Image (cartoon, rainbow, N blue to C red; front, top):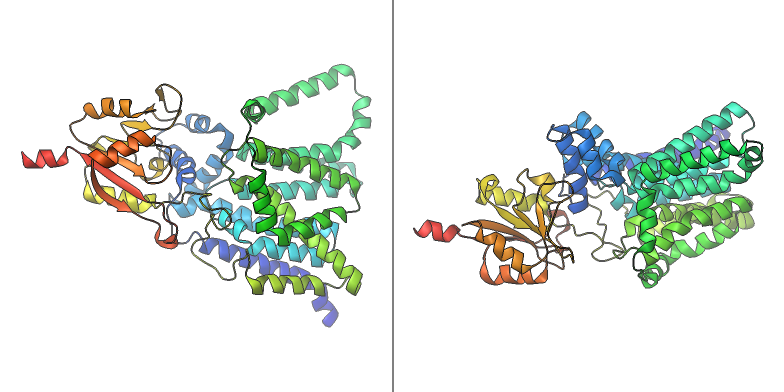
Length: 496
């Protein structure tokens, strides 16, 4: 009896972690709290397609570099209706699936103990929970990256050609989905190619030159025209930045308890080809984040966090082997210690997991939902009132009423929005010209260092009437992202 329980204990434990991960993530989207701008924009396009306000091709072309995210959200709307909950559900499912993939990869390199320790961290890590409860593609890419690693490792253990071909097809399908979710998904393809290319080399040498040329040309065409590889390459021709200080802050000061064991965990992997492929696939992400991403958003590092978790499990398994001859007691003790300490992990389900726990202002999670509700309460005819804002990302979800003008910090002359038929202007001069066109109107201000030009914001605060202000979301009152609504012309009309 004891042997039977011991035999199924890893499966029971993994199942428990999967259930806990799903419960924690579902709880995190249960209140339908407000979208932040990026969530709203993608989901707003999916909503337009679902309601027939735009065609599928037009909607996808508006945000081609995330078009599988649009398709996924659209599918969720078809099943569950239009809501923030439905838009975020795919990320919940991807994040939960990632628990299983982290287990599988860590187990491949170690044993059940290392796999379960990785799955435990993947389940309760604050950063994972935050990104698994947003209508964004990063939880999917994190999971698909680990799935690519697991599939590639399985290839080397498979003998039958039909099984090999099937695994290749699954890996390529997963890598393609990851890239269609976001260009960051290229990390999957890089690992797959670096891991399998040596095996393909002897086969490729037997092919006629024309076949090899056609294959390279075809893959190049797919990369540039379907996967937006051109966008990725263009980043290398932009002025560079240096985010090394932030990288050190994140991986060393914030996550040293994971980073240090993970470094040793990587060194303890016996398969040198795996070490090389892991290093080469993570290098593009690190280079992009360090030198080409001014925003320093942690969500772009999420696939590396999944890998960090796996290597953490590998390290403690090796320690367990050296101390207790393979017993999982060390892994269990480490998991209990982390959970008891509560550092960077969440110990009980919550209705909201902040994405700003590691870096302040990583996400400007203002309460657009309440803000637009208050606009309609105070101005029931809002759909007929001209208004200005600094972008329509948030409005694309919470209203169908397009702004009369958008004001953003840019060095370009006025130009039209990529998707919506609205002009974008760069300065106060244009604001005054546009305001003259309307006897009354409204202005939405994000009262932080947002995209609206400072001179425009200063003029509005000094000369227009403040109607109301929304400080923060009810689920995150300590995070202040104030929204303000200003007006002109309404008082004059009432006095006549």
